[in-house]
Image (tube, rainbow, N blue to C red; front, top):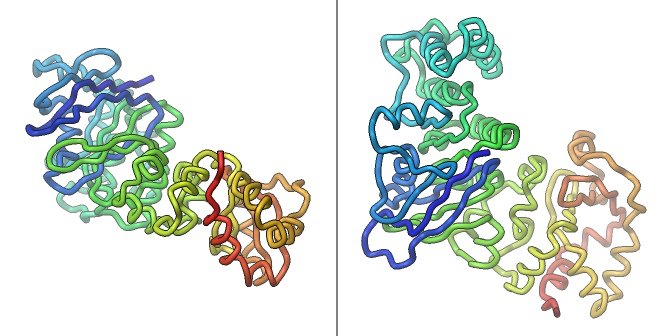
Length: 373
């Protein structure tokens, strides 16, 4: 399993807080920051193109080689970079570009051709195989740069900000593929992005950069709830929560379903503590909000009348269908409210006109309670 270890790390001068962190395999990591913030430089350090101003970076317990020949051999063991600085070779066809990289990685011609055809068929790119790179559209070129690396299933995959240039539907498709690579191969995928909202419901770990250095790092929940970073609040507010829920990643963002700008910090922390038992309320396909069991129990002690009526409507939890099957049935009736747990399991429905009419007031009341330890 891959592992990155960073100690006493700084990319630029005039930085007091040196970075120490360990990133284990199976994680999708985002380096977020504007151009010039240092986020893109982090990938260059991990690919061996640049040394940090201060500190050490180790991959699988070993320092990244400095000598050119040793560095090239190290990369061939499973480290790849996707960048416009490493384009497809113009004198080779698309097919030969992909065939070449797979043969370098040890695949036979037959194995490589099978992988290429199967992969490109997924994205309707088979017609591009005989083309030269200069004949491709901008989007096709990005897709093939992604496929060139993805076909090799690297243990460490570094991606410069190409995903931002894809249409939204392709961004979502590639985010899912990259997350699957992390899960199946226990690889580390690190993406530099200036637009975290395009992938943050998939992200396991965040590195935030400013003025040339990493200024904060951690899981999304830690940065949102404990560090209370305003920049992330704005980003999370723009995520499609229903899409995040169906992708199975909503529990990583415990404050996602409600207005995080008006919620007290104490409520956010309570949501973090109780996120494994968090319920999401949906009217048809529209996400209405959510309640954690911790908050419900606290509110029951203080505002029992309204919440007792609310909870009495919950059916017995006997339905084990995944949320994807429930939502595939189509929008519920206007007065029906689906209840989904943090893992996407369908728990049942609420059927009462007054529940929908008073839902927002109810949520506001619950979230305004200060949890007592």
